[in-house]
Length: 340
Image (cartoon, rainbow, N blue to C red):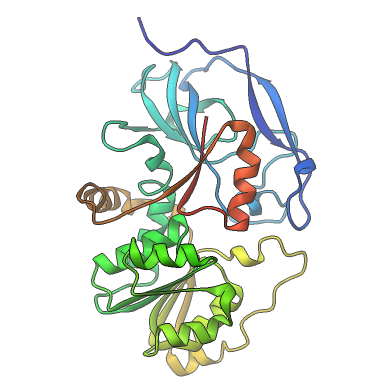
């Protein structure tokens, strides 16, 4: 007999009720009861245990054409989730297994087995597969090492450095031999975390003064790599401090996600001619070939204690929306997780 729980007839989920303009409002969403379906051929039914909320989800709430389809109105939203299989109609996955998938924002999900990845709760805490060993971790790894072509001896600047991606970028850079790692964050407490726990050489609170001035003070010899999670004044500051042959990897631009008018671009782009600098955007989905190497290398750093991570855990699916809005406000330290 399986010790997996019997699924209920209905379960709760979050749906997009209307497309937000500017900052998302509670009335843009609906928290509803939905039928729990029986898995069809090649599918599994998962009881979600942890859900991920991430900045990119704001873009999916818009109807604008992007690299991923927008959320559909009146249907459950999606996002990273990890949970236990309670019923399986697929080979290779059994009731009782734990899987990672992308049908979050709900208590129960019917998932195509080919879109589910088995994870080992003995090897790492389940929540880690949504962050440090999941999509956010691979984003940091691929963006720094492949897109930004990091090499030993580089000086690295990371914005949003206390977040799930940024904190890992800075630590990987240090572990790989960076000459100096600088981070920006939105509170003095986070700045202290970056230097005292994550090993950044310098960090500053971007609310304490112009970013360009604080970056010049923290990196008087300039930066070779900038990992951008913020955009706006941070990108302009990084261009201003970029060394010869510097590289900028654009991961996100959280500072402009809720703008209703286009944000002005950096005023100093012409400096890239002088520095022979390069700016390149990237999506983690283009780099899943690095997954085995990433899990092996980063997993070893986590087990040895060389790479540290934090999670901000919000309890209860009813608080999923508050957790997401908290990410946009920067309330989280490390990965924001919802525990069901």
